[in-house]
Image (cartoon, rainbow, N blue to C red; front, side, top):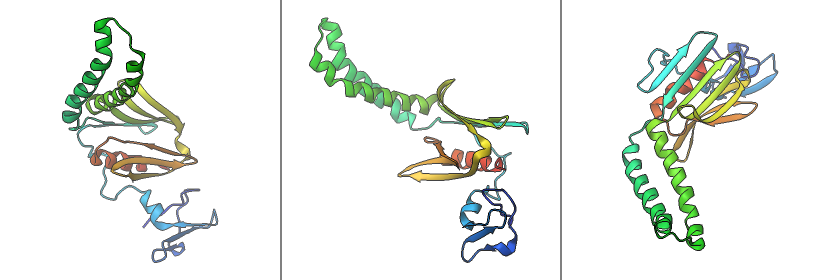
Length: 208
């Protein structure tokens, strides 16, 4: 069993690993850590980067790599009609009547603000379930996470060398991936379990 320190990346000698006590000692760092946490940072032994499933695209040239997963989901079958009814019905009822009558009602307009916010959120979630993508790319020690549609979305740039561990976590019923180092970066909400599994294991293979 090959185990490496999460700080200095040095391989740990077997005599410094205690499976029963779940401890691993690094002589270089003079530090004891949880063995299970170190093993969790390693990719599954049965994982293969060549077995990317549907909706996943991988590019790996050695010095640069990228992985992209589609956020397309069957939830769109429910979200599309619900969004049309919610956004179309509520907004047309509140603001459409004002435009049609050529009159402005301040109280009614203020009442409709929560419906505007709710509609924007719902439309965003629906569009992501139809056309969204989650991607992580790396080149020249800099990594970028992108979540969005096309080129429009959220970007997060960071130093890949400062990432110590990749984990899959669950918050309520929502699973996501965490990149842990000096700071924790969470992403991957909305991806299927299969895509989360592949992406997290692929990223684990890229840790040095």
